[in-house]
Length: 167
Image (tube, rainbow, N blue to C red; front, side, top):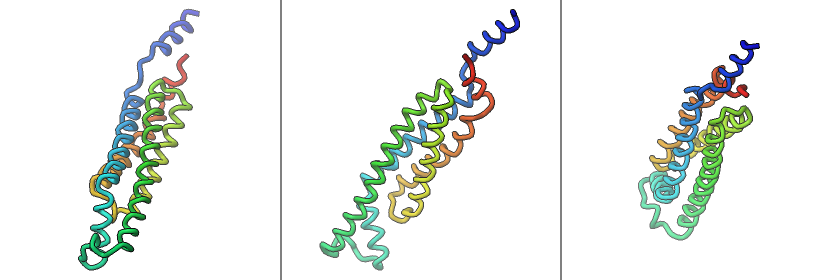
């Protein structure tokens, strides 16, 4: 009987595994990088699109080409800005799930991993538009990608699973 009691005590007073803390920290930092990437789109997106269009037209200043070109730049910027807002929304949910996953509960870790995988997919979509995105957005998106990739396996290591099964 005393052995059972000692085993129960040792699991209930278990400290948070460093792998879980690292995974949650990396997830939160990845979310912050996603927000930084979106801010880069909001601040420098229109200029980056104009610069890209000018290069594609043979070095012409695309901002002086008229209303049709201006409308195309506005439309492209609108599409990028919408992706930025979706990225911010996803990052806020990722931050909330990261905080909730600190307790080690399996459901929260699974939801966090799903949102991190979603971040990986959105980073892949940003790669398609790499020529148009501002440099800050690309660097931040790449950092978020690396951190997301690193944190997903950490969420499900055996020490974290044992921590999640404590009473």
